[in-house]
Length: 349
Ligand code: UD1
Ligand code: UDP
Image 1 (cartoon, rainbow, N blue to C red):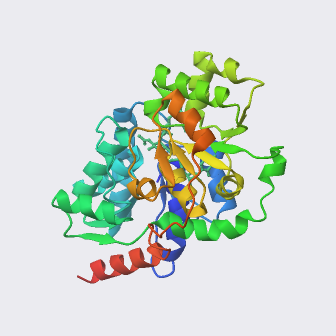
Image 2: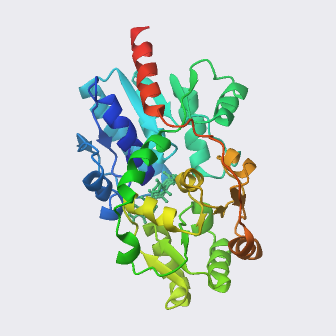
């Protein structure tokens, strides 16, 4: 693991895995700022990583290559029975490749997700990881269907989403969070996150989003990913935001994030994890992307895709008010237990 959402997934699975097994935790160092990494180890009881490869940031090939090179040494010396990878980051891809090349079995948590947009770095990471993995652990029925249509369903299992397990623990803890008063948030607010490469690295899309936020007049709270902060500062867009209706804060810990989402009137995001959490919490989600892997949330009427179109974003901030019950689409919890059971059966084969 190496990126923020992976620490949260590991928070749920690691505790379950360690009941009967030895886990050697490798942090690739893809994320390294305190608020993007250590905060999660400090506040959640994720075990301290046994290794930190400290690869840091860099272009895709360089970052993936560095992880591959360093991880190979760790796998050779630790000789694990299995390498488990989460999600779709460069750390995921490098982890899976390093293991499979050494003939070590690979399990992929969050297998089968597709956006069908190969310009997304995550899409390439997912496809390659799924196709080299021995055990595919899918969170949704749609993910299972994708694996089937690609001819790799033989070792796929529908286990539900480990983020539902994480949410169940964090939700209790979030009741005690003081983040709303700490950030001096008053009244109704919309919680926003923004970091997807397709939005941050495209000047047109990014300024449409900023303009939509500003012109909506909504009270927007934006815990800002360092990637986006850098782009906003370097492009001069940050000056436009200063003193206006967008409250920019540093990224927050997971428990505080759940509290912020739970307290929000609506959620604006381009994150994968946040779309799911909005659904679990019953908050309307406005997704600033042209597609989503979490199609069930859109089909259920609780998530709307607005791309980076100013009018659509503003319209949704004003009028997107889904109502009605939400059926369970993430397996209802217990994904971690199911994963450990599957790994054990696989081991005995
Ligand atoms: C990565 C994942 C993305 C995931 C996201 C979670 C890939 C290709 N992308 O995107 O799928 O949704 O993590 O947050 O793996 N930076 C810092 N400090 C940090 C980390 C990053 O300043 O601790 C800045 C650096 O300028 C870096 C940029 O953010 O170049 C991008 O970081 P990187 O890890 O490459 O991608 P993310 O956008 O974080
Ligand atoms: N998150 C967090 N603090 C923040 C923003 C997000 O703890 O300031 C959590 C969020 O609740 C979710 C995960 O980070 O569990 C999502 O990570 P991110 O959006 O970075 O990546 P993605 O899910 O898009 O890969």
